Image (cartoon, rainbow, N blue to C red; front, side, top):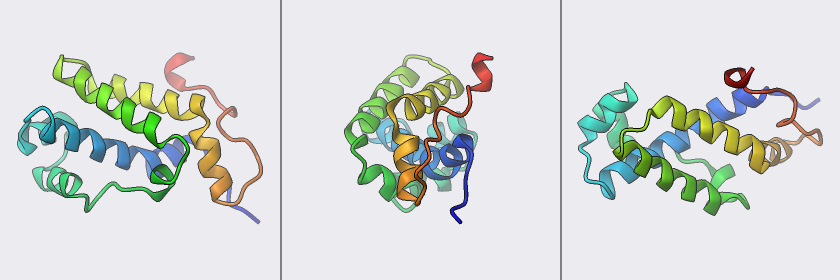
Length: 129
């Protein structure tokens, strides 16, 4: 029997760490933010940001092998740019979660984990209820 995860579980365990790492890397490498500044923005340690930037943390083969890979990284670049203009990280990550559901990325991950069911349509974001 295949284990069934909630969409939010897939986001938290499979997608969000990669997104945070990619955003951190973009902010440091493209926009010249210090790792300390990004750590403060994310509410985590500078050491964690260092691991994200070095690629030691946050990678995900589901994303890198996904048909949505380019869309994902385009969204990451837009989020990083928005953050440099004062956008709120929580709102940006919530929008990214909506993208994961809308695009079909969550369903693709679910299928790659062995399920034939559709998952991303099973619930609405509590933010919009």
